[in-house]
Image (cartoon, rainbow, N blue to C red; front, side, top):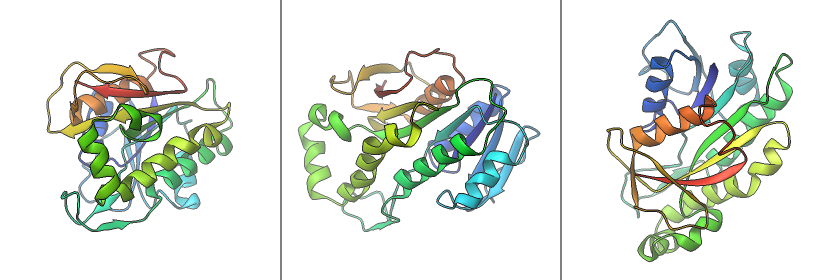
Length: 230
């Protein structure tokens, strides 16, 4: 399959890129800074912005092969991991990048044998999953600078159906707290169900997302918001 990965240089995206190539998929990466991405025979690297329509169109069409799925591992930036650290935006990075990717999937591909997929890493605490989010984390969403990031997460959640329409099979991955490396079994829950744990390894989350994008789980998670944890 041919994937376009956004956020491939991030702490979770690096695992998604590595696993996709290990599985034999062709991958195109769109990133502002590509210096950390190692060349690979099945990898096409496009330098540009996920917010630029021209750059997104170039990434979608660069190989001449249809993109079967877009994987999004983006996250808004703060100056440090401290919840109260200054938010450095842009304020709608994730929401506008997802909308841009969906637009390009809908309009820039003519030879598509099946409906493309859009698999987006979002976060538990966005949308309806806020109601099953642990109380202490809800306090952080409401009273720390994490809340600025959640404005973007909530925009992704609110706009996903409109962006994809009937032409794209989407999955919104509501990850619990992301931590470290290592592959562990992934448990899934509906957006209104309390998860079995509050943590998932970045590698587990990325691998699960790639498997969904590849169609390994058929349509079980198509057009759904899914909480994932270990």
